[in-house]
Image 1: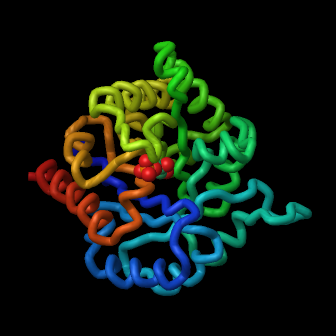
Image 2 (image 1 turned 90 degrees about the vertical axis):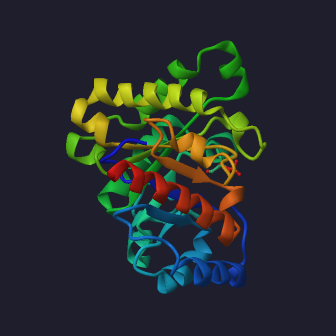
Length: 261
Ligand code: 13P
């Protein structure tokens, strides 16, 4: 993690937690998270929980969605409009998570449309990219991820790119307990930063936040954040428990304070 980039610890609850569980979490965590100019803390929950979480969010913890449609309105049964997310007070949205790409036929083209729509409605996109185990073993991870980034950022302007957070999540590391080593994560995240440099410029590449996701937990977060290019984490399982989520936030806060000394 490099000085100047505010770290992000984003929880992705996926299809976990009912209303009571979500409320218990937010009441415990709200007062404990640091000011978001030190660490940006975000919880991405199921759509039906979003309003109740937004109503109870404190000054620092932000609420995000896990997906949305790219159209503002229309005949899209079961989908959620970015405009409605904005109205609801949601400020972040995960786009292109591998579970959506693999199980719900999300394509590079729809991911790109969603990134545009999120920006239009002032939602911060957390754009996910990542390779399967086959690609990792074939040694073509960086090419794969580079192609996903280029496709997702098609026609995104220099002003808009600064608002995007990218999350590198190797599919083989998600929910498996098999984290990428800090070196593997750093190498691919640096390659992503270099793609942003090629597409935009040095200053944008140095400012954009790029997270790692895939079996992050309180035991491995520090070694990941020790790497220069890793600016935080997108966390599934370890974000469900308030104490574990707060440990991740604490690790980012410590790193941030050390960087500023
Ligand atoms: P886990 O942290 O449970 O591996 O999930 C990662 C993830 O998919 C976050 O979006």
